[in-house]
Image 1 (cartoon, rainbow, N blue to C red):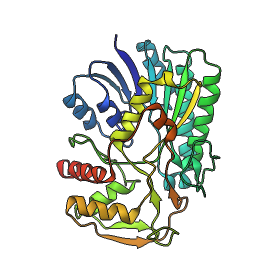
Image 2 (tube, rainbow, N blue to C red):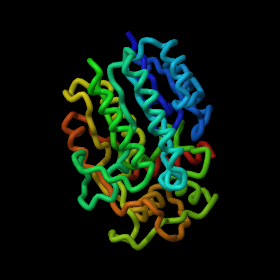
Image 3 (cartoon, rainbow, N blue to C red):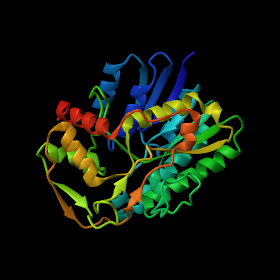
Image 4 (cartoon, rainbow, N blue to C red):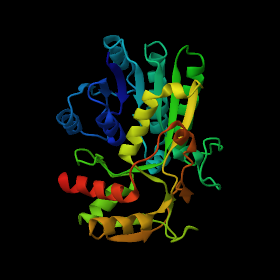
Length: 334
């Protein structure tokens, strides 16, 4: 018997890599995506790469009446994996109401159907941004939540409503995967990070600079770090996908109804270190310049992922792989 998954935001950067990581014979996928920051061509690539069945619906999770149609049509979900959400720190500062509507209200809508559905698990795409500018590193799941921007607070609110909802649901579990900075691309260059608008993450800007499309602006070189640039825990997007898959297959390893797990490598890498590694492994040059810090950015953030490590999951790719695979993707799909 196949497991049927509802995957929200399934054509986005992380959602599409998650779908690509699933065993063809074991899963039937219902994918919803409003295409605000993704492309329909991703669905073609997913179909070309595997034989798994993907039902696609181009809807927004804030459209509750359309969600109802999906849960009416598909009554046998085993799990819901929730990636859909806006994620720009800077935009969230400028348009906070947009983030609370999309991220929080959208999640509330999804939970309303989840609690009455056959699905036994709800896996939420959370973020390390919920820890704010933590003075202690590495970051543990038990650290206080101190969001520094509306995007972070929207994730904190989502976690809370998931926790409160799952508490009153019988025979169901929920997981909030707080992951750090996903980069890289599919090792076969069939998928990668390809936002519709101005990229929010660092790697797409590095790729544009390496491809001589634009100059890379580095926001701040006066942080109290080894080279003055901010430090992050970069994790390969395929490792992030495998972490979701691992939890999907091993939810019984955790007894709590609501579970929080950091997903990272535990290794901080500065912006300049990432650029230098990218240039070295790909034998190319990344033109860059320094500008002022962005509001809401933190100095250093890297994970203590010992909880999920103790369960048996570990990242398989290094920073060199992340840089190499991202460049392969860029050269394949210019």
